[in-house]
Every structure is written in structure tokens, then in C-alpha cells.
Amino acid sequence: METSSHDSETDREQDADRERDTGREHDADLDSDVEPITDRVHDNSWSANLEKPQHAERRSLVVEQAKSAVEHTASGHHVNLVTHGDHGHPDEYLYDALAEAFGEDCSWEYVEQCGCGGHVTRVHVE
Image 1: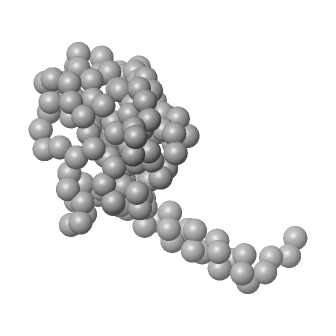
Image 2: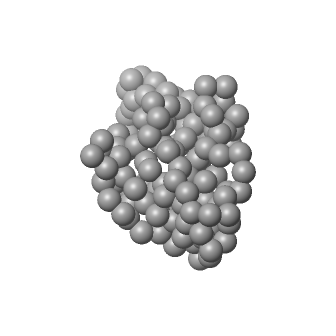
Image 3: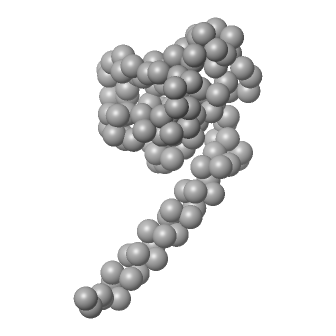
């Protein structure tokens, strides 16, 4: 099959985007323009705001900070992940990432769509 230079250029751009996002995923809380989602373990139920402008720009940041929020929630409690509406319903991108990261150590349920278009997912930490 013959490919055009446009196709290979597009592939290179997509590869560069993936590399950039992969690097940022690991350093999501370290970006100078991004505040950490939290700086402590919550021994109560709490909400993580993943609706800021930088979350609208990068789905990978939403996923990484959602995982960080779960990691910072003590066993027996839950965190409400309030995700940006620009990325659609969280079952399209977040639930598989949570399952991969935490397995059976947590469970989640969709709560509702906010009036602003965002989505609330409650994650129970076992």
C-alpha cells in the first residue's frame, strides 16, 4: 500500500503527541501550570475537581489526576471525581484506566452530569 507524505507526517505528529502526553502523564502533578489534585491522604470522603481549563485541554491529565485522587483516598472512603465535560462520559476513557490501575481495590459508580456539562463519578476505595 502506498502512503502519501501527508500520512507519514500525520503519523509523526501523532507519535510526538503520544510521547508528549506520556511524559506529562508521569509528571502531571509536576507541571508548573498544573496544581496537584491534592497534597495529602484524605481519611474522609471528598471531591476532586478535574474541570479546570488545563483538564479541558488534556484528557491524559484528567486520567492521571483521577488516579492520584484515588491513591490519596483512605480505605473505606470515597472520592467524587468531577471530570470535564469536554471529554464526554467517563465510561469512554476513565473506567478502564481505573480498572487497570486499581483492579478490585476500588469500585465506582456514575452519579450524574452536572449542569455545567461535567460528570461525577464516585470511586469507593476498599
